[in-house]
Image (cartoon, rainbow, N blue to C red):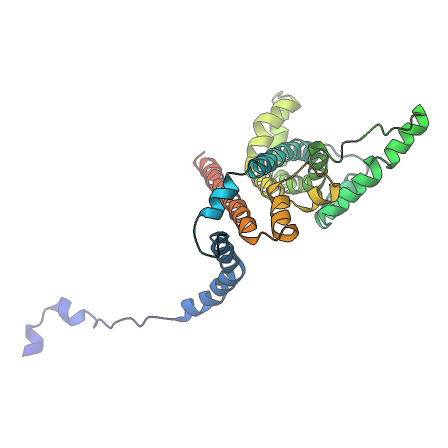
Length: 298
């Protein structure tokens, strides 16, 4: 009788059982999180903690205040940013030119050039600096050849120990990081789209400006951001050029931490270097998200 008085909806509704919480996703996520904490977060936390140590042995902001007030810090910061920005612009211009030539202007040996560009990506940065020393150093091959031609005993080229020597070495080494993403972007561009634009009477420059480059902006932004991040933290090229007057933040960190053994001061500089890198990465993510969002809306 009770069953007959029940409504059909109540009779057909299944009994609600509380869902058991699965711990499997948490267990799978825990190892990568622990690795990140051990490799990235823990060293940064130790550096930040060391930067708060004062000369008296206590904790405070005294070391930060003294380091930020030094003229050597301001000069190193300006030198680091100027070299990184100039090198990145040079890599963008040279890398875009090389990628366009390799992708759209085939010539004998283009595949060999592409393989050489890939090979540069696997080499350490100081090898480029050593090659520059052998070629353009005061006793290098180019100066020796110019001396034989002109009969002068003075080296005609002496730029390796200047900021321009560091910039040219960084452009030479980091340009492949722009070329490779652009070649990948150009390879995905439909060839029919280029043929249609050419058949409608568009000049090669117009096709490049209105068809090719709009498709390559995300790859160009990714390559440029990567190069800017790498040049901002580059130390090997600055060290091996022997440019004593070119002191960047990484070189100043090395001097304070290894040469003078000022660990709190080096920790302050390292914290600022990390802050610059994180700011650059966040800015890149924001710009990349906007670029991809505009492409999807278009």
